[in-house]
Amino acid sequence: MSRRSLTLDEELHAYLVAHGSPPDDLTAELIEETQRALGGAAGMQISPEQAAFFTLIAKVAGVRAGVEVGTFTGLSSLAVARGMAPGGKLICFDISEEYTAIARRFWDRAGVADRIELRIGAALDRLGELPAEPHLDWVFIDADKENYPAYWEALVPRVRPGGLLAIDNVLWSGRVLDPPADRDSSTAAIIAFNDMVSADKRVEPVMLPIGDGLTLARKH
Image (cartoon, rainbow, N blue to C red):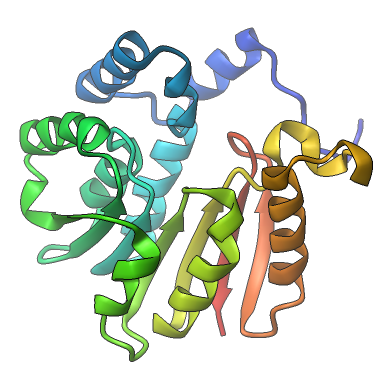
């Protein structure tokens, strides 16, 4: 038996989702609407097992203060908000009114809209609105790859000791192994970012083969 993680085909992935915490009707509807309305862009949505994982992490970690950079149609924020402690607040940064309009509808229907604050605009311009002191329990970054290092540097100091940061797409469909001559700007940015995080002494990171690759890091 190999010690490495399995590669999932469609059938095995369906088995994995069904035997974890499978999407409830509302989550399944959000996934379906995103695919139907947005076509290829729906690939930006996190996987259903990621959503279940985020809800569980939010419950276990007792998340009360969180930030998300890149909200899309709201599956990740919905998942985290459902797991947040009472009185929690998740601040979401995104540039798209179109995509987040879908998110708002599903937050309302799930009864978690009071836990989520959406701020539209470039996150690099708006992250400075957050208090500078370490106060965040949770950070999720899933936006333009070239700015991952800037988002990281803006948010790590704002995470409390013991708080968590999650970063999506860190395996980039395997393109992190592309030779330098074949790398586009996003691939090069992800590779450089992964190297940066692994060397960052402020955090304890682990890279997980969930979705398109997820780094979960705990602040020292």
